[in-house]
Length: 191
Length: 252
Ligand SMILES: [Zn+2]
Image: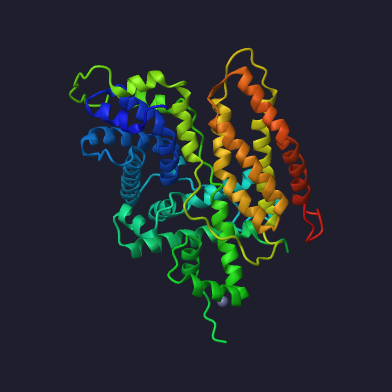
């Protein structure tokens, strides 16, 4: 049997960096998936993964050894993603210069959804989905990711986002509404 | 009859299993085609969201993260306690690759709540686009399997890249099974179930596989006839995708 996270956490707490390294190597890819969905951007997601492990290392003393390291570091990554998303929101309140990072992928698509026969490939469906996600506001995207991909109940989403359950619910609804409007034309029956 | 339509919000909550009164919502769905159509549209959208692409990170990603943060870790006071228990255990572990695989295995766990399949949706609606996605999924699965079947290593072979792809495919599997259920296609559903099992199995192999273990894996793939079945299914699906394809109602 390979040693569990618990053994590595215990060693890392005593200052054993090699033990922490094992934890980093074990959990990085899962955190990347979460961070990518939360931030919608590869380089931001990589930053989130790094920052999450740095925070985890600093807070190891606070970690309750009876709980799972995986879910603990996951939670830290959710918070790091939110911090980044919030700081992006603040930045976006200031006028931004036009640049490639402002490009909205969905703007490149025709105003009316392409006819189903034009997106006959699964790959194109996936890029439509990505474009629809990119159109959500940061609040909508993070609430939706936590509900849809991370399986959190709406109440938990509210707690994770630091808002009332009502506001979290509203963000999830708005997200689903926008996604449905963006994707439904591509999935409608052929007339 | 005083039917009150279900709101979009109520239907979203139903999809995620968070509705307050499931029995009441179920009854209202049952009695109203309009409500059912809205729910079907919502299900299509949310099911398709599962295909959201997440760029792949290879098994070396964790090591890269480590290299980037290593120097930034404020050194915690080192307590010398001899060889930490985990090192003993690690030394005993048969294969270091197992560590990475434990993670792959964890990823393939299904989500706690799975949405209910569409009850009485128009089978034509959106079927082609979804079938196209199934076709693409089958093709990508086939590529992974073919690579493994055709490999002819003289020594242990590193299959971690194939495993990462298999794990990704597993994470998409739910969407396509839903699609098949939606199209009322039990045969497709059966093949997808078997394919998912095979992919999970591949993700669970050691990442450095010996020629003997690879041979065994190949044997298993052959016995299941899985490659043949997904090829046949793939070509049927592609036929169904074509705009002037099979007449309405015809199934695979
Ligand atoms: Zn109704």
